[in-house]
Length: 117
Image (cartoon, rainbow, N blue to C red; front, side, top):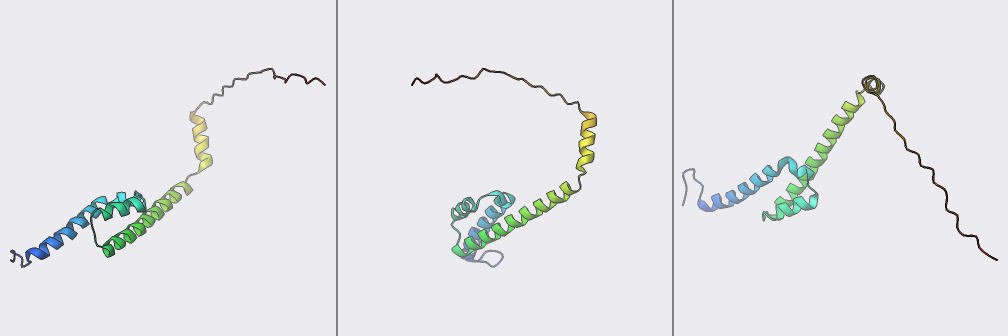
């Protein structure tokens, strides 16, 4: 039986399953980049995806995770390299007072008892 757009119910059911799985994977989105490969594999296996699709999604997630990590690392390096640490330390010292507190305890050593010959 065909529906209004010409697809039959069998195509709609299989497309619906894959479509629903893709919606779930997409909803995981960025959080997948922070999941371990094992937890992501478990999440995807629970969705009962075909093995080829599962492998492709895991490979894609791994590649995306590496790409995000590299981009974030590069951005942090750019920001940190632009900081004038001496200037910032001087500005900090101008606006703060340093207070150092110390406590010293002097304790007599305990000597072991002398041995008798």
